[in-house]
Length: 146
Image (cartoon, rainbow, N blue to C red; front, side):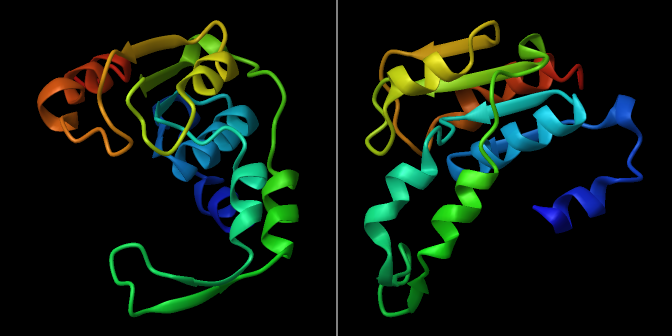
């Protein structure tokens, strides 16, 4: 996160926004809290330190199971350090949350972003497989890019 914050330090604040999905949504929330920039959060992880603690040790890549990596216990502490309290500008966040998310709890996602614009999907999946067709326009509208 230090590298991210250093990388965006000189970006024009009035033209900066972040978009993140899953764990990237957790990181985008941190950046939005730190900078005040708008954020779009797609099925964002809310408690990654809690949820990932059970994966400490040798793991395989999701899309390449033959590739291994080691998930260290200290990564949990790093995630905890990035947790933020209430959003300083909840109105600057759009969360797209699928009730059909097979990885994360949609109720926790919705509860994490009070005062934010929430697009709650009755079905869907963690990947938001219909993103380009069903949600991209909402993201562009929210960020005033169209």
